[in-house]
Length: 195
Image 1 (spheres, rainbow, N blue to C red):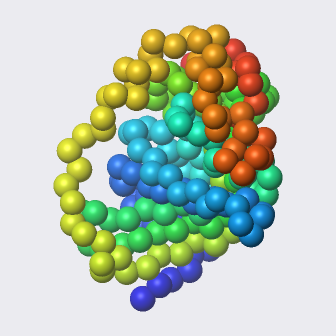
Image 2: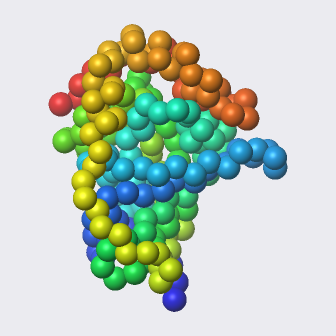
C-alpha cells in the first residue's frame, strides 16, 4: 500500500502541486510539549524547489508554534490528502527552518511565489525532505474544492510593517510559543519586494 520515494518528482510532484491545501505538524523536544498541527492553503503559497526541497509562505496568524518548533529542533512533517480523484496521501518528513524577512536568502526564495500576496507575510518555511512516502488514502472523504477564502488577504492588506509588528506584539503566542520557546522575532524587519 505505502511506498517510499527517493525524490519529489513525476507523479508525486504533480500530485503535491495540484492540492489546494496541506497540513504541517511540528513538536517541541519536551515530552509534555504541545504538538502543533496546522492546515495551510492559499493558492501560490507552496513551491517544490527541487527534488528534495520544498518551501511555503508563513503568514500572520494566531500563533507561531511552527516557527518556534523549527527554531528549536527543525523537525516537520507535511501532508497532502486527495479529496478529489484517486485516493492518495503523501507525507514529507524532514528538517525545516524559518527564513525570516531579513535573511539574505529571503529575496531569492520569494521569487518562487510570483503570484502571492505579501500581506501578513512573516517568513518562508524551507523544508529539506528526509523521508518521502505515500499511502492509500482510502478513508479520506471525497470533498469538492470551491475556491480560496479572501478573508486573510483582505484582513492583512490593512497592515504595514509597523502595524503588523504591533499586532503581533499584542498576541500571546507569536514572540513566544505556548511552551515558552522563542517564536517570531519582533519587530518584523521591513519587507522589501523581491519582484
